[in-house]
Amino acid sequence: MDKKKYKVAIVGCGGIGHAHMEGYNKVEEVEVIACCDPVPSAVEYYKKEFNIPHGFNDIDEMLRVAQPEIISICVWHLLHDEITIKVANYESVKGIICEKPMAIGVEKARSMVNACEENDVKLAISHQRRFTPGWIKAKELVENGEIGIPNRAELRVKDGLLNWGTHSIDGARYILGDPKPVWVVGAVERYTNKYERDTAIEDSCIGLIHFEKDLQFFIQSDLMDNEADAGKFEIYGTEGFLKITETEVKIFNSSSNGWKDVHIDLEDGDVAIGGNTNAAQTRELINWIEGGNKHRGAGDIAAETVEIMMGIYESARQNRLIKFPMQEKGYPLEEMIKEGKLELESKEKYDIRGFLNRENIDEDLYSKLRDDGLSHHEAMKTVHDQN
Image (cartoon, rainbow, N blue to C red):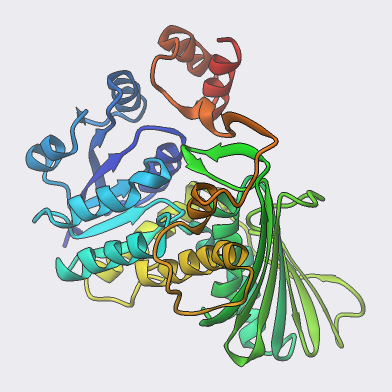
C-alpha cells in the first residue's frame, strides 16, 4: 500500500526556509505544494529553485487554495505566534513546524500551544538539533550512567540569547531528559540599540538556571567567543564529563583513560540545520499526527525554554531571583528598555540580521549571485553590503 503523502506549505521564503526544504526533499511522505511570502520576488525565486507548483503573497489565500496539511513557519520571530494561531485554526492543517525561538514572551508561546491543542493540530518547534547524532549519542551516554548523576551544564553562545541560546538551553535539556526549571538568576547589558530580525536583543547576558534534582545550567551569551556555538556545550556529572557538538562527543570518566572520542556513525546529510536533521524532524511529526509518540520538539516543551530565557531577562529587570512559573508574561527586555533601565551609549538602531530583509533589494544582483553558487544567506549579505 502506498504511503499517504501530506501536502506541505512553507510560509517565509528566506534562508531558513531553504533548510526546511532540504529536509522535506528527503521525506517520501510529503509533497511541498505551496510557498508564501509577502515579497513577490522571494516567492518566485523560491518556487523556481524548489519546483513548487503554487506561490502566494497572502496566507489566507494560500490556505484556501492549497489546503495544506503540514505548514513550516519560517518567518521572523515576532510573527511566530500570530501565524501559528492563524494556520492552526484552518481545517486542513494537521501539523505545524515553527521556527525558533518559539515566541517572544511566555504568553505568546502558551497561546500557540493552546491554539494547536484546541484544534487538534500537532505543533513542533524547529529545535531540529535534537535529531543530530552527537546530541542523541550524548543522551544515550547520560541515560546509561556513563557520567554518574548529572549536576551541571556549561553553555556559551553569541548573537543573542533568543537566537542561539534557545538551541543550547533546549539541547542540554533534551540530553538531560527535559528537566523542569525551578528558578533563575540573570544579568543583562544593553548599551547599544541592538536588534536581531526586528527584535530588540541584549549586548550580552548571563544566566544561572536551577532545575529539579539540583541540576544547574550556566549560560553566557556574547561575552567570551572561544568558538561559542549554539550546538556545543559541556555536561558534568558525579562520575564524569561530556563535551558535545551535533556530530562529536568526548567523554572523560573512570574508564576513558583521559578524554576519549566517542564513536558515532555519521551519514551524508548529518548537519546541524537542514539535511537529515530536518528530515527526521518531519518524520517524527508525521508519526505524531498518525497517533505515534509525542514529538521530541513539541510546542509545550519549547514553551518551557522560552520561559527560561524570559526568566533570565526578568531577573535582570527585577534584580532578584525569579521562580517558575513566571508572573511576567511579556518580553522583559522590552519592558526594561521602556522603563529606561538600560541606558544606551549610542541610540543608532542596528540589526545584526538586517541584511536578510528581502524588501527593496537589487533582485537582479541577488539572482546573479545565487546563479553563481552563493547560498541565500551569502547572496543577501553581499547585496546589502553593496548598497
